[in-house]
Length: 503
Image (tube, rainbow, N blue to C red; front, side, top):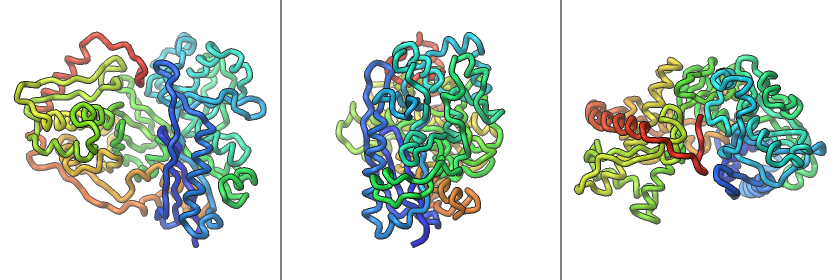
């Protein structure tokens, strides 16, 4: 058996583990779920020990499926959820049993922004989500709310870096994870001392970054025994999920574009220059590939909006079946318009106080019209992001699509006609993040000479081209959507509750 890479994607809902060979073929995968708790509005926490249990369980399941896999694993790498803030003490032990995850908005920004204007902070960091989500601001909340625990905190680390510590006994991070700290200068390629000083945070609190394919250390005997693997396997630094997904979605060269269509959705471009815009606030991370960046614009509630509508109209119906109801409605959804900002909007959509809406309804509006209006609304929202990302980056690349929202032929037709761009579906779908992690391991162990080998994993399943009359078919619907968006944005803002905030 050739050398294998064991790759993990430590996501919001669970840990996905997969095993890859040097030909970029996935041999097996599994998912182990874990819970998120919500102790207060805007607060979302997980238990790092649950992450570790998922790593152990998923590894053991994978190696039991593939004969001799345990002895063939030659490298391990992780993709990890972003914006985490795990508190560790002098002994590298957990200070508190739970930790806020990326969507936790407890952060306190006043101290930093009193010293450094918020637009300048964005220009330096590219941190385009709501500022309160970033670890440097979560640290301010820790200090104010739990001073005794904060006094014992000596390290503030990300999700996959804590797992790497459990695997190797060594604590480091990589540049992609560090770039989501709220205190990383994209221009300098390291932590910004002025931001750290404004936050009152010692530089030693944050692990120094290395490149994603650098070795963190070797699998310890204790970790190896827990996982059922031989000790000594090299563990690589890995990457934040946004960078790993971009890498696994063929984002290996200037101008490469992909759309992740899931519970939330985003349009992402790979480029040497960070794509920054103070109005729309693309979020930017360092790529797993040295010298590149990952920049994206998103809509927070896409698949979740579909799920909400399904639960209202047809509880229990499979989402795929529900989506196909839209086939009974013509383009334009009989005049119905839906704005999918049920979880608040991005700056491009009007900000965190914006909420979703339905308009253009009449007594003859059908359930099929409502489903189609929902699909069209999500497509119009993402079209706005795609057009701006193309404009800001200069990319005219074809659009690779992945995620649950790419599996419906009917929805893909809507996307192609509204986005007015060719869509490409490949054999890599939900595996993009673990493929990215596997690529990091293969490059790190020297089995691959460059990251471009990830393209070998992608076999094109279909290309969906815009219909000749697609743009004209949606012209009136686009005008209604734009008018409804402007009207909704003009309403008094809704006070954010437990939903994701945006700056």
